[in-house]
Length: 466
Image (cartoon, rainbow, N blue to C red; front, side, top):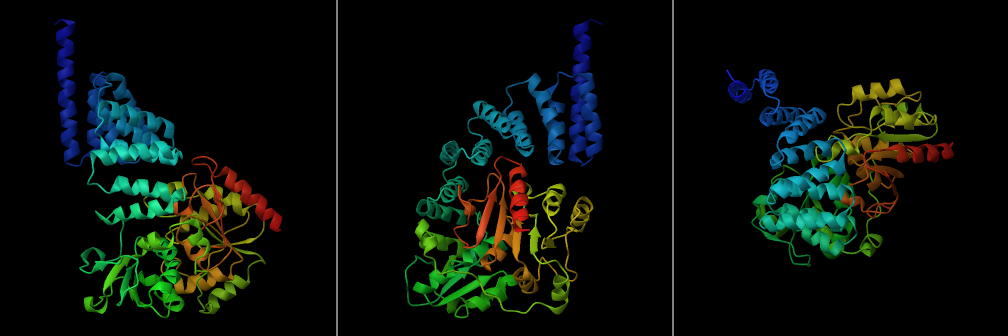
């Protein structure tokens, strides 16, 4: 048998094994598929498909490093497959290698200029590098290819908002009410009433809360400005915020998220985030806002008060994590970073982190010589009525961008919010304070995925308070 024939037989066998591996994937036998793909590679290491499929398996496991290696091996063999560059771009982005991600998305688009997913992720990479000009250009190309898709318009809208072009940005943000990109509370997308146009009318306006708790609190700060021009207002809000909003807006009729509201009882409706286009069109609108801070006068539960009173003089409420899927990981601190903040002084750091974080607290306390203090019996996720008095007992709140940041800020507390390099647009750009909340200071990363400068600022600031 000559070499050519022998190689042909080996290549055909590699193809058959690759097909067997694909069948294993289809029936959910992941481990067997991995073995078979590697067997195919051993037979023919110049065969790109098993590398590609292995990359796809590892990327689903969030093993971006190993997935990258597989895609890079496939690219050595073939450079005309746009999907390889696209997937490699995803891996590089998740590994924090943004410049490499950009290069790979660009290579993908040279092969397939109509790949709208590549345009989306490329635009997002430029945005995260704060290259807003190129991000806007890419989102425009995406919009040209998909003129009926509201998502690229929303991406451009948020670029305008974070750069204080509010009049343009909030109008474009309305595109998010198409295709459920924005998520108002139940009933909004089934509405048969007219959307409110910002003008006073004879009748009742229903305002729907939207997105998560943080957004509802943030945009709730616009309600005093709304009530100046229109008195008859219903508000639908997350049930956990019901008591807070009821106390602060006694003239509103407030409904919980799943309450039925008789359609005949109101005349027009709006999503709470859409109030921005009427009441936050310019920076001066923030400065002249009727909102100061929320009141909440429930007394602190005796058992919680006793625990807090046992702490040292300066009490700092602390939160370091978010469970949000969208951009959540880049907003979080890891236990080592938290311990570096706690260990710089002997103040009492009170754990205000919601969610299942017992293991994280244990790890932080093992690393730090100044342990986090958890309040026994306090449900930090659902019991805002008892959480709020605890927040008010704190002298300072230090938190990442999560629900606590908005809740504590809206209560008028002294809050330091720790922000990633590319932060949520609502915190704007190039300012160290919040336009929505008077007493909130923002501390921003000076480079992607690094809390080093923020931790140093905290250590210096907290040592000065000693």
